Length: 73
Image 1: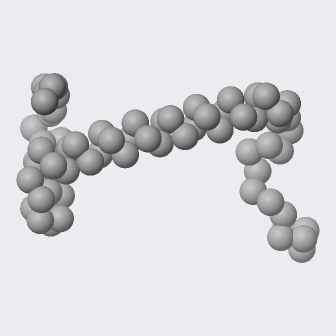
Image 2: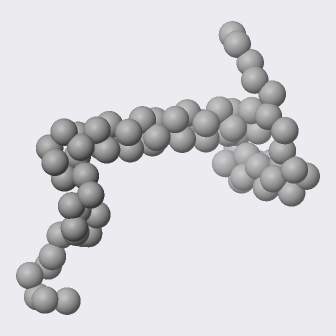
């Protein structure tokens, strides 16, 4: 299996270790999950942006606003 090396600051590694321990998984497993989750989120964002661009929604005023609740607030 291919591998990568990631340099982390001491505080970052400490936080990652603490989160891994809290979750009951290895640091490697936690880091793998975080990376995969981030890649999937970025892919969804790109696809969403492409869909908005194709439909003409990109850059339209209010496109990023949540739907109104109809109460004027």
